[in-house]
Image (cartoon, rainbow, N blue to C red):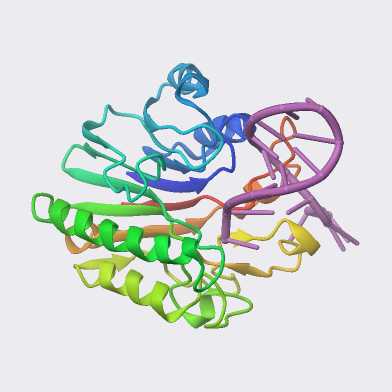
Length: 256
DNA sequence: ATGGCCACCGAGGGTGGA
């Protein structure tokens, strides 16, 4: 069983890249964030033609999350975590005995801003939702773009004064982990942990990045964890010649 | 080399991303 998460930065612009990813990597479950399209523009038929099911929580211009899967998801919750009702940042479904929760966490912009306060509120609501879901699902994974750097060595330029790195954000993530979840990340020799690199200043080329895309598993899922991999190849222009403009995030996949 | 912002809306530049 392969589960992946990918902030694609527009599902329609990135459609060729996503279809190639489905072909090349054959994920059983692919969770997308930042669809940036309305419901009627979601490319469902393209995923169906590839042999996949899909559920989606869409919003025009901003946000949007979906789950693409080889089997049909059951008991789907459409945007269960909402502080502002118009922001589509969450979706969940059950596949066999596995509950999958897909989040696009608020960015927060800068420490102390209104968006930062909103981020912390959103994370607390997310924590409560996960706690409730854990009470009825032993095997559970929470994936997505968390917009939080878990540890100091997960960012090239870590500073507690910066957004994504602040104590309050990291404590909010820790409160979620304290529900009984574990970060599936496994360090690899000579490979940086990052999943996001700024488009600007050749950050990817220089490997100046952040690890902010996470997969958090319950203990009954973690015992089956075999592999963890960041698919950096999708960041190369040559990987998908049909759409050489890549997402600034790389997909992250676990194998169970 | 794996490369130097990108996508949105809308008609051009402002906004948001992280």
